Length: 233
Length: 187
Image (cartoon, rainbow over all chains, first blue to last red; front, side, top):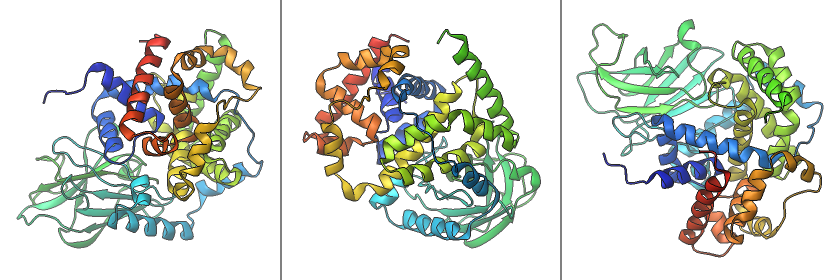
């Protein structure tokens, strides 16, 4: 595909992303580019480096009680936060309100284009929506790191004799199977200890359609039909 | 940046982040002790509310705790990486919470001709280049870029606040960014 952007425009886009002025689809497109194009990611990083000195002189000590509060957040799941997270997640899933748009980020696996809305709730629960450009919410996922249990709700998956297989794609880019999931309704997947370590904030989840035999497979045999990024563990 | 102190600090932070990635909470404390004032400044500047900024700062360190494994010392400076997390978290808060207050707060933000406190002057000496380069921009691109940076405003909010069409505002900012990069001459 021909690149319609000049090098200069591309660099300005990296600057816009670092500056934070983009929203909605523009921000989504820039974030997809950052994921798929290391040179663009480096350009965004260069802009962060250029801007960083602008914060010189703003340093201010936070309240002393803050560190203990952070330690508590690292230690204990807070159920009111989880409920709030799920409520926000539903808002984000259903409506593209200003709130949802402001919280949404979009991710792409190539191919095919698969932007996905993600809501960033507080830390103890991770959520992701997996989908494609035409259908952003094919599956909804939430993950409770404390229990190591992933719940998947298939909202609208294509009819197929193949079964949906869920993959986690960590920073090394190598998909690891988390097993088959139901093509309708909800399923629960217990995550092995080895895979728990991979389910960090920011990794990509993807669904491919695979033969039932031999699952979980070593590697996907086809392009993902849905993908999304896990957010805020 | 040729000074050895920033280099040592950078190495110390990179080492601490590597330990955080391995689940070392004492290392997170070390990162917190050496960076929380700076990151709190970032959050406070964008949130404009102490309580909100403290809540955002907690989220920032929890994110650092979970994301430290993704920090690549070969590619990024640790403080830049940490500032970007703080900035993005604060901007998310701002976008989710400030909608109702716009455009009045945005107008006030862009009307502020000089967000530079006196105590910044000294700090500026070390990093004067970006400040000098901003000064070289035309007024409107400079105002727009500064407001975007310091107040976390979007294109649409900036256009409202500066009462210009969105397209005009975008071209100011893009032109400004291209000019900034040329001025900084860092590749």
